[in-house]
Image (cartoon, rainbow, N blue to C red):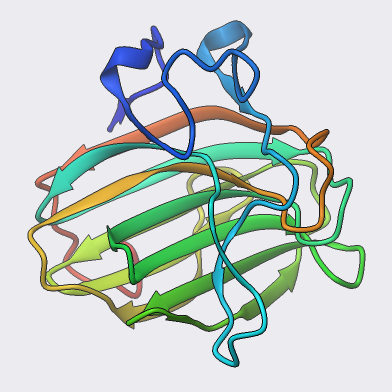
Length: 207
């Protein structure tokens, strides 16, 4: 895997809902990490009942073709409910998926996910997670995606397995979600590792 944050250069990424030169939303930190500061009331969620629609979260991404495996090490300061540091896979304006490390509505640290298809999102709460940081894994095989979380970057636990998109190219990257926040949350990303043109044998096992 190649760590895309090592020797970080903004020009190696594309940006959505933020500018490349935005020094408030994107802060370069020591040891090749970055921090994202989400603006108030930003997220990626289209309520299936139409009550709350957000697709305005800052998103820093690369374009990836075919099968891949990605691993991201992150933490955040857990200020507001639903604050999340997340990895997002994005096909188009109506189809995306996020894998989140978040402050849950129950005020716990939790792993969660959201898959948006044809403009409607679901919301899937995952397990509470007591440690201060974790690794999130996103793996694609054909038209299918698997989400995993890990306390050490090696031993993975499957969170979700789903059919996603037939598009050869997807956007893959880091996002900061704060639908209930006031613009003062911080999401820290310590590494963003990617293996392109890599196909696992067993998607639900992640290897």
